[in-house]
Length: 319
Image 1 (cartoon, one colour):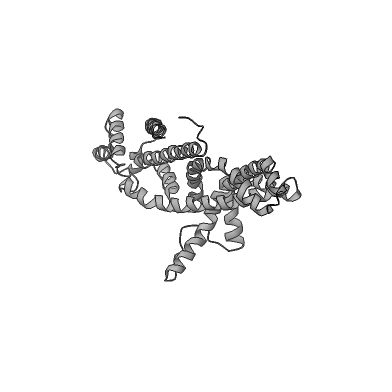
Image 2 (cartoon, rainbow, N blue to C red):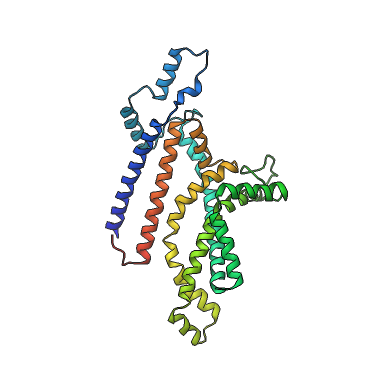
């Protein structure tokens, strides 16, 4: 197991290094110059040259690349061009907000996906199964930005049940309970929209897996011995049906993070995805590169978790 883990970590580090190098090359090949944001008619060329020097844009590309790799290895991502603050400080403020959103979305998809998957498997080939499966297919097919806009239109503008943006209200009553309630109200819409396609994926996966398990001989034998149906379903059938799903949870991490980019921007959620989009519009090279690094790290960590879970569930998998 240790050898397998070391091998997977080595491959993951190589992938992250490749993503960093490719991201650096693509960003510097793209049109536009970060210093152009500061160009004014009254700025003299010497001031612009000094500004480019402070940003490190006057150095050769290879030198900028070496400095960037050194900064990443030391945990220092440089200074944001647009905010004039350390990138690490900005990420430290934004990532916890994104984790709140992604963890809430993960829990929603896990609970709802499992319940709907079990329900459709029990009611296999019935009208209820067809209705729920059609609705799940609709959720899985719809773009995330469309679902977000429709959620804001219906639940915020029309019904007025939930807030449409930000993490908290402008005026919050004193007390921990009031603050927690306000945060949960702001979290429901973005977390629900982010979780929607994963609810559909989890439910359809469990439906197919559980329907297959329920046809196995040992399940029929359990029913024949008079074991209660609820015990057979949850103790024997569901336990074996969800084992393959455990290996997919690691893949949800990067996809949740990718979906959070659109969701956070639409709901004005002050997280990692929103600052990354703003950095792209501002040509903020350090912020963009740091965002790509975090995203690549999430992908390789998710794949590593999936590989480890798969090997733990099925020891026949060899490294």
